[in-house]
Amino acid sequence: MTNVTVIGSQWGDEGKGKIVDWLSSRADTVVRFQGGHNAGHTLVIDGTEYKLSLLPSGIVRKGKMSVIGNGVVVDPNALLDEIDRVAKKGVEISPENLKLADNAHLILPVHQAVDKAFEAARGKSSIGTTGRGIGPTYEDKVARRGIRVCDLRDKDLLKEKVERLMVHHNALLKGLGAEEITPESVMEGLNKISDEILSFACPVWKILDEAKAKGQRILFEGAQGFMLDVDHGTYPFVTSSNTVSAQAATGSGVGPKTAGYVLGITKAYTTRVGSGPFPTELEDNTGQRLGERGHEFGTVTGRKRRCGWFDAVLVRQAIKTGGIDGIALTKLDVLDGFEEIKICTGYKLDGETLDYFPAGQAEQARVEPIYETIDGWSDTTYGARSWKDLPAAAIKYVRRVEELIEAPVALLSTSPERDDTILVHDPFQ
Image (cartoon, rainbow, N blue to C red; front, side, top):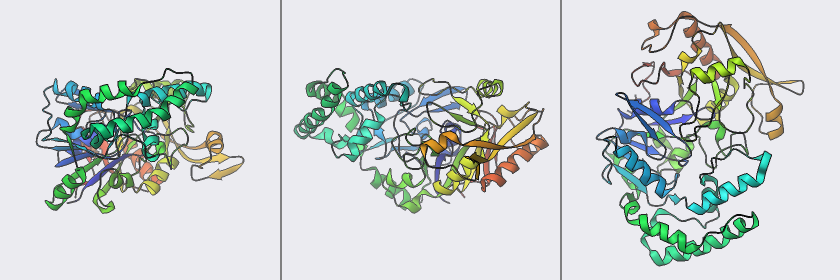
């Protein structure tokens, strides 16, 4: 038995919610370890749809421990709203089954104000932030002026920290021509929710160490995707945290060996939300068709996703850098009915051929995909639960993907329904 870490291998939106839910039914504890409420998972269980942003996917299953790790930046009001929304669908949530790291950093209204003000000031050079305060909160964390969950316990110290924080942020807001925010209003907001937030707070590293000692299965649930990693992604069009598997340890307070089997969730084509380079993007009827068939709209933002062919170069790079052992290939059914399908196998850049995605922003914008074309299939793969249910051409496509990315397909998803999944290799074994 081993633990499993789930990360996205593209630009997020790969269908992690369904796969994490499928795995969480077999885990004892589910942990979110990075990101904030800018990322979302959609789960469909017995016909009921759950949209989760901060809550780990295990929360919808009885008898599971859900943990929000120290690597997550937490908007306390968004968390309480999400708890209330999910509870109204019959899910029991209490300090018994939800644990919040007491050393996690808090997103405050001022972070959202600064986020939006900076994005507006960038104009046409915007980086596509959701405006939810994620980036400014991570900035404060690194600059050692952040407010943590545990700070809510000491009102005098909290007041001192908030006043110091607002000196910094109000100077920024004033310089950007935005309305300043008083420390008093920040304190008033925090005082209203501090008791409820603190009821979930604890040293989660200790909870996880105890789970590990008992031999329990732990599922680490990543948000977003590899190409949005602040170090390894399409910088600066990235998120403000590390999205690779190594962050599972840092962002939850466990050793690196605890991460276990790393499963990279990988869409059978490619999508991206917001600004930034996208080598295989299709701005034609084919791209439109992929978007419509795949219902490509963001869970949290509702923004339309850009669509393109599968990029094997990017995914292979994610596998090498992200420590991925195998992938879960999702949304194969969206490719049903295409006469031919293309896969990006390399790039052309200034007359040279590359087998990797360069780090430079200008180079990333200029690379041109090199495509391999394979036959499509007319029969449906929707709802398939075994290899024998798949068209031969679909199996050929999956096998070719494995060859190009140099990693096996451990799971194959053929619809949003939890049980429409072909298990090739059990990550927990």
